[in-house]
Image 1 (cartoon, one colour):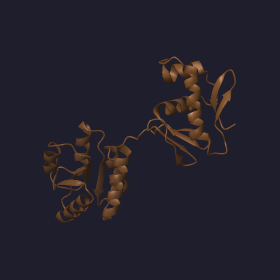
Image 2 (cartoon, helix red, strand yellow; image 1 turned 180 degrees about the vertical axis):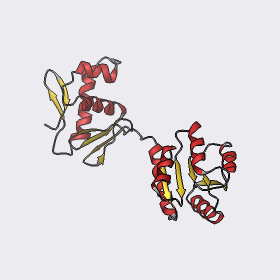
Image 3 (cartoon, one colour; image 1 turned 45 degrees about the horizontal axis):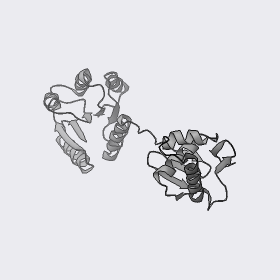
Image 4 (cartoon, helix red, strand yellow; image 1 turned 90 degrees about the vertical axis):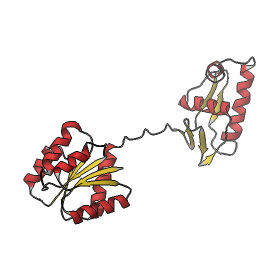
Length: 225
């Protein structure tokens, strides 16, 4: 992670830099607005920290300049000014946060982390199929019943997922054959019966509630009822 700091107080600038780098945030620093813009143009940064009252170009004008070409990277104003007009001006120039001096370095880190979480895309939750105490994770090819992981072969897993996604509907042998085996062998019906029995031994045998059921003359379904 890369931060660029605008701060003309040499002591505070060094304290912030040392602290952030101890938290794995590589920090470049500038003591005036012109130097900041020179550094700003050299590489991309993940966050900008701007004091307002600095030489040459003040922090609010720097904020405006950044936003002319960069609308996404977070900007946190760190300033001794605590009046509402300064804060209003900062937010009008599209700053993301405003931290008043003096502040704890830990609070600055909290503000930075908050901004970075806002930018981090939320990962899509992996598909999870739940039937009573049976949990199936299709993407990971994992199956659990009452918290116990159950090892299945590829075909057993494909058959179980097919039944589970049917939400209690009865699936015919022909449909199962088409979806799982693609009709790649002759004795389809017998093979399906064999694999249903394999599943029953692994999924149902050691549990009171049976989930895999036969509807004579129609096919199979998965349900706790």
